[in-house]
Length: 324
Image 1: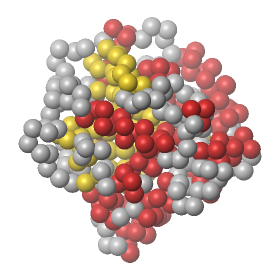
Image 2 (image 1 turned 180 degrees about the vertical axis):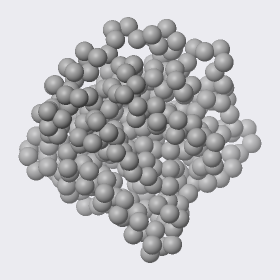
Image 3 (image 1 turned 90 degrees about the horizontal axis):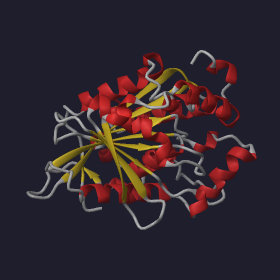
Image 4 (image 1 turned 45 degrees about the vertical axis):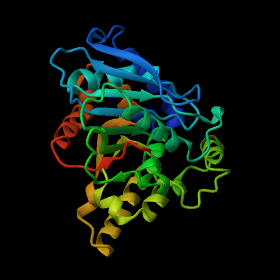
């Protein structure tokens, strides 16, 4: 962590050095490997629509264990679920969460807005039909970073999917998924701040139909989302890294401003369950890469997040209908 400031804040420039730094910090054989079971499942028809399920082997694991879905980033272009196994192992081992890490369609697979949200909807539909869902109501949490956060926030606020996020009692004999929280980590929420250099702009243009965002970015969707969805939807945490680029931080600040303005004009509850925090010491990539190092200072933000999820599980939240 101490060497990260010297790498700067440009995401693509710091990528190789950050990867090398945390590859060296991570043990070759994680102790949790022997404590966590991992299985792979197909949640949709596309070959990319696979999900790894990480679950604790502890005999004391409760059948009511909540589900955490982790969505990685990669500029709509890169990423594979197996690279993030330490995330699944960490939250399964220390917080008894059932962790799902899916692959989703990338640009090379023909991904176009809002395919990321579509993949999340498919994953939740698959989840609702699994035998390991033992409860009439199953708590679900989302942790999504960078481009994964764009997909998660699109799912939350796109009109095609917000209708699924409602408050209701589960029908007798039919389990429901209750979306409790969504943590957006280092997520570009307002694409008007997106850098204009081709290496950044080209993948965004490819996903958003040659850059014709027209209010379809997360912030644009948030502005149009019904007040009832904001009021009764999941608690949303927006986290940005201390060493994130300025444009990522500006997006987080602008999003909070939109929520606070709607709170005033529409008389909504304070921040409607929105919370913004800075992850100290990390850059755009290192917070996720630090998980699995076993170094408490590096993983502190993840420990805090896990404890927050545990507290939120004790509170009331919205219910996501299983019939997607």
